[in-house]
Length: 381
Image (tube, rainbow, N blue to C red):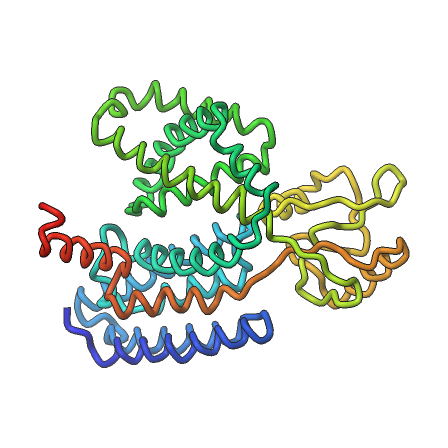
């Protein structure tokens, strides 16, 4: 594919606005909707010019279609990461906007779909940025909790979960015509099982067993194939490692103590003031935004949150002082808040790696390493 001048203009837009998004996220902990709107407006204009405005041929229509599909799946992925508490809504919108704007001619190196290359590059950068600093913070109690993952009962349910959920995930991805890779599959399994654990609490084991039985019946005898068994083993190993590091290790380090006077707009409280049975008390929140949002929206809570606090939105200008007053009245000088981090620089970096490598940068790195090993006679093909 020949990269056109308009493709390069889109790349320049991604670099310029990516710098802007990263700056505002780092300095003000905010990605402005107007910046995303301007970026999308300019990108749409360039893409329409590129396609001849009125689709002069089929190839022009295909270019526009590919941009729209990438943008749609980008928004869906951003929504998934928001409902599981990993990204703020603005991060999800940013990922969708960049997915829409990036030219398809820079997405050549891939084992699956374009969006999987973008997601793979972004997740690796985010994982490095999140995991490495937090590994130093783990203490003995954290390591004990991580070790719980390797207990026989946990291993058995993890195997059953991978067996059933891998089948369900493939069905969904096949229906949506999405190609995944090992890292993506294992990460989604971590998120799904973690979400089941948070939402359904003890019932998630029942769901795992039902999915296991469903595959056992409806997918027979496909799971006996050697290639399928090897795939399940690989996914299981990556899943266990991700679960140990992410769900049981680092996500339990996602709260910090903050002085009540220093609370500000967009802070997310990890402990909230509630009125339960005519008594004012405090309740610690689950990490996952989806659980908090659904519980609040459907009125599933059996208590009243004081201070007009919305768990899905965080502190706002209207309720900030009310919340501070409630804490101070009960002689609380410090409260737990969820740590937030500026994801925009890492998302933008993932897209820049995609542009430089013209696709999945870490797949390209793997190919390069294998080539070197083959050249020096270490690896035989």
